[in-house]
Length: 321
Ligand code: UDP
Ligand code: MG
Image (cartoon, rainbow, N blue to C red; front, top):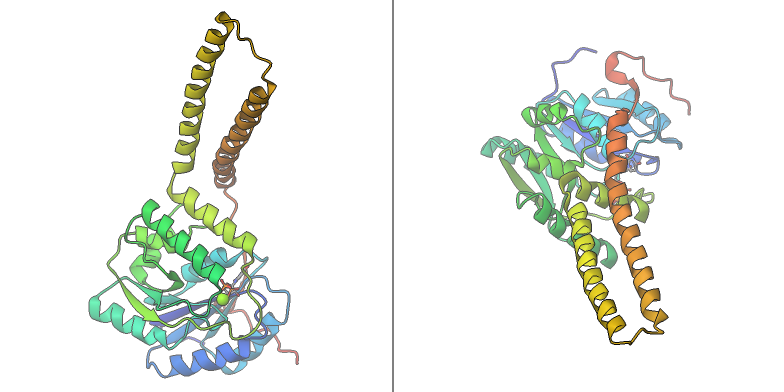
């Protein structure tokens, strides 16, 4: 199956998305077939344990542009995204979620924006968050405000991982030594000319979210530590403040001793010991976050393993029914 190289690659990471897959295939194919561009869809099967792999194999039987990249184990959304983007062959690479929260119709707008404005990056920006819970809206608002302070104003607020990258931007990403960059921060940081396209984010078409609270916290921690040593600086300031307060208390104690007011006060001791203990643990924890990341970086293990890629001439898996 040798076709001319695709102009457009659409990367879709998916983990246990059996239930949305038929909807996704139908809608995405409808949009892409109408574009008059040679394209490929890179479905990244992030170690799914349900029927996703079979469903993909079945879809491939009638959709030659569908390419399946299977990761050997579940590696997480960001890693799956990186795997797909780095292997995509198109001049333009668009990434979108499998659950149809990012409307495939917007891909056409992104392509137009990139071509007209000669842009290397086009962000999909959510026009509003009506479909999100109050909690998600609030935490997201906090996240983007913090990130714009840490990384810079070029980080678009309310832009997730629905975006278009030019070939040049993909190659720049490949040059980065990081194993799993937080794409929504690293991409703006690359400094390419960029634009935005707004879209309405739908609610999940089927299935359940794969982003529980713990993963949200993980993403936030990775985001902060990958762009800022501010928490470490904060620990230093806490330490300095502690030293100053202790110095003051020593003076107080000495003065009290000479005036004969040696106190019965264990409450103050108790509070001071507890407080210092807590501050030390906090600072140790902050330090630990960075040490852990240094450790992972030094180990240098790959963030994902590609088990199979149908573009490597692998025969399509037989489709059991
Ligand atoms: N995803 C993935 N690997 C994971 C978790 C999620 O590839 O370990 C995919 C998931 O299938 C979906 C996308 O990442 O296509 C976004 O996940 P989800 O929609 O569950 O996140 P939410 O929209 O709830 O934040
Ligand atoms: Mg989703």
